[in-house]
Image 1 (cartoon, helix red, strand yellow):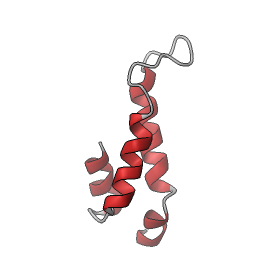
Image 2 (cartoon, rainbow, N blue to C red):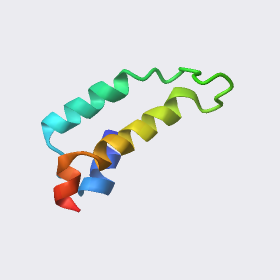
Image 3 (spheres, rainbow, N blue to C red):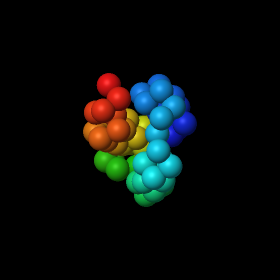
Length: 65
């Protein structure tokens, strides 16, 4: 997922440090986390949301756009 976010949003310019930080943050979200109760998509959807949010709010994206 990080490679795809890098390709689509940063045109392949994501630094290794940013890649590592995004990976660490996304790995902290369990893919099977059912919070809130009744959430059909679970942690997978929240991982995608968090990944997009992290890239879009990063200083690298702000400079690139």
